[in-house]
Length: 362
Image 1 (cartoon, rainbow, N blue to C red):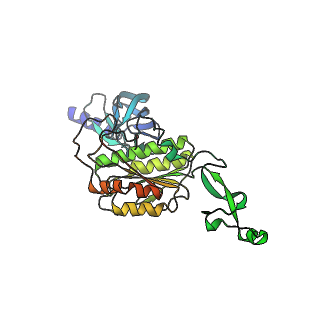
Image 2 (image 1 turned 180 degrees about the horizontal axis):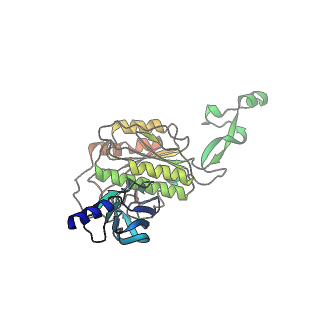
Image 3 (image 1 turned 90 degrees about the vertical axis):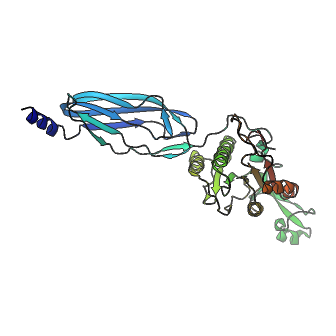
């Protein structure tokens, strides 16, 4: 009889109870941040059953309370778990499906099944530095608001014409009006703010330390530029995100940063940038190939800023001391020697040293 009863219990509880699971959480967050999580459960069972549901987050996300629920169900039962998640690492994290354990009321036969995954994945963007950008950096992000004396020429907005002055570009000459008046005349366009900010990351050299530093600096620049109302984009060898000032454009740029990984051995390739943009180039080595790419990009960009972060040559803000090499790599030394000539061509150079903050350039 006991064996027959056990077989009946085993057969009766072969099918799992019905479970409806809902997660309420932000779809994204920043590395090092904390976001709330609410897990709501509804369990239905025609027979009395013991139920345990485990809903562990991705390994790179740490909850302050384990999202686990244990219930005794007969008919229908509901439960809710609240927790706070600490986002430890950037990336696109797939949340695994919850695990359902169920058994008869005596706990004789336990079974388990994995519930389907619930989209969307959790997007964790690079963390930003808690330090404010120095005043030195702000002029590099924006040329100022629309005015008649500051900013970049806007060829689509004509302010007027004037007589030619030595040094004016030949392309500005108004030939028809000059022939009619007998005086060499040039067009004078309106001036506008810098059209956008583009941050290019050279990941062909450097390890994890450099990559994480570079993406955090890039995220800091993007958020600052967004506060200034500038269109933003991120570029790497794979291409560039669309430039724009909407939240969707900023999200696309931050998402590209979240996905970046080292590209050791790849040749640097700066994609075309928006005309008049300020281009930041973040690199570890700053070799000749990258400098040549930056010079070519200067033909379109308003200004190019090369920021060298030699690995083992600087510390992050608040970082515990680690080994510091005596000097920067030879490529960075060569870059410093070329700084004056590059500045004359509109390419500025900054090299981080010692325990300088990544956001205290120069």
